[in-house]
Image (tube, rainbow, N blue to C red):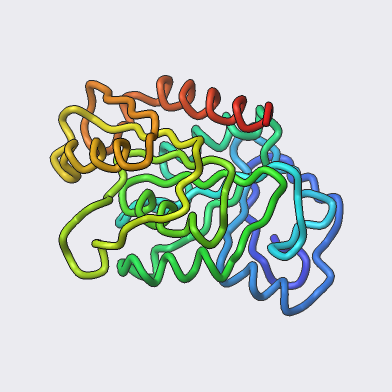
Length: 223
């Protein structure tokens, strides 16, 4: 199904579009950087002027992990949580590259804007989201097992501009990203750190992830 002039939309429920995109350049830009789709029994409500250059009210932008996709288990679940709070949802597809800087550049080029912007990321997506904070200046950041503070080229950037509303969720048994790295990030940025009885994916703790994201979004909405 074609949305506007080129951005691809996969619909698995009812798609409500209030206004088609009008500019060819914008449509191709969205096509290159975003795959917007609805979930089963989950209608995506496009804002009246959905544009990376226009200001929407509430928006959350997810960043998936290194080898996952834009609509994996966690993002699919958490997108529903965000929409219940009145947030529009974007989950770009970064699978064309496994280089962190490529993904950071893609997010910065997308340049999402909103009165209340929230970035969320899992594993490598957590690093991408954190590194984009200085430029995008989100109101909140939600990180799940973020691949931060690795001493390797391309992974060793120091995140700046982390918002005061920052939640980090990590597993005690994470064998990919050491817990100490999440603890260091939380300590340096005064972030709320939640350590769960889980591994790297955190997929067995979806209800708790739901609750923590919901609490963060509620706090953002009160600001």
